Figure 1 (spheres, rainbow, N blue to C red):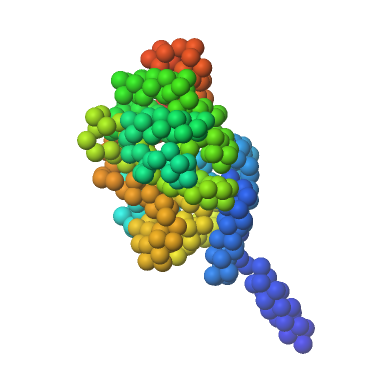
Figure 2: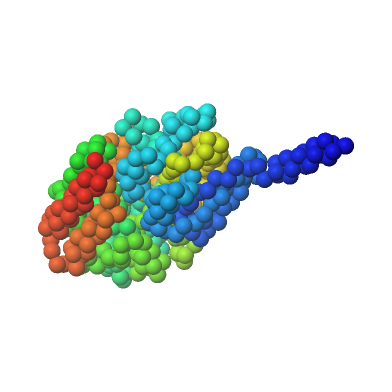
Length: 433
């Protein structure tokens, strides 16, 4: 009788504990607002789809705050299994030896089916090693496009969006003549007006394949094309064709208020513009300089990817691999793409979105995808992999602002930025060589 009672207690305990057997997987992210709510929704859907694992998304602030928190947590041995890191942190994550569990290896070790060719090469190239193996999982990728106010264009007698920067100048002059205050403004000036300008024209931003070839890279964004573009923008700032609006995406306010008729911004800005613009707007590809290139190349991405951190159990990693497979499903990716405005990361998600008629119902939402899949990525258009990139962007911002204010010419400003940026690269190289 005593043994039967003991057996029943053991069985009862095992039954009770089985209800809490799901292995928890912590996912730190930087998605606030509506996108943050969507992240919670995605995690819940995965959790509801099976009972072995429970993904727990945790908002840790903006990109910089999230990455800083993850580094501090790793040092304290309290790191999450998954952390979302913005694209400029890629080199730093790669250099963190022993800290990351490469995605391609994780999927293989966990026995998950994983076909790297299923992902858009222009997206995955940014997060792959020299052998083409994916180190992190792309999650929210975007690329810059040109938004334009169709109502103001119509009023000024302009029938189509500009394709080239020469067109931007002539269109802007017509807009100014019709009473518009400024032709265009820009968000994220380093990313759009230098990093993507370089990729669009297939010229290097840095040596050694834009940093993919190693730590000894040198910055090259003070070449003839970049200098001419920045110099022209400095002239446009004086004439009203261009209006500087700050280092992030503050230019949105000038576009919403119709102060500026055009806005170069992330493709992921579409939802915000659709929500806030009280006018008919269009989306066009990022302009290029006619005569400088026969066919513009693909632009490069912004956004972030998901990195898996070392220091967890095999069971947790099986759950992480299962979750990453779930995230890559066409239905999940298509839904995230359509909701957020970020690019679909797989060909299947892109095809599904087309089949569902989303692009026809929402004109302009396909522009970024088309632009990103133009041709085959080259060494100059695969992306950028630079150490201390956050600091380098700060240096670039200062240089560009000195041109917009008329304090120095473009050549001097970019030469100084390259010199200061290279010092940051050497500092990173010394710390990680």
